[in-house]
Amino acid sequence: MNDSESSYISAVRDLYLQLPVTANRFTRSDRLMARNLLERRIPIPLLRDAFLLGAARRLARNPKAPPLEPVRSLHYFIPIIEEIQRNPLPPLYVQYLELKVRQALRTNRT
Image (cartoon, rainbow, N blue to C red; front, side):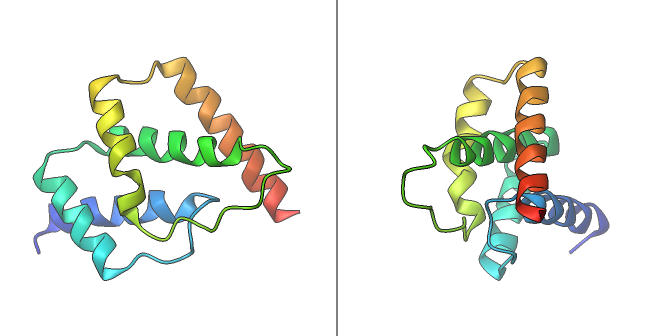
């Protein structure tokens, strides 16, 4: 593994593990998927947007609905990555998603 590949996988792992909706682990399968995303030339900012959108969607569920299990695999985000490749998110919407996810992180810590 070269330095750029290692840096990319580390960036994916860090973004993934920061999300309030994921299990706190990054498995061998996740590393292989991250390598696949690198080979597909998926930019880190697009991945970040997909992670935010996926997390925000889960966090926006009806609070009366049964709780969801944590996301256990990077594979969960693949359809969202493909969705954003087809229809990039507007920058102001990404800022809104960041705010929602940050609020959820603060709420979960208290």
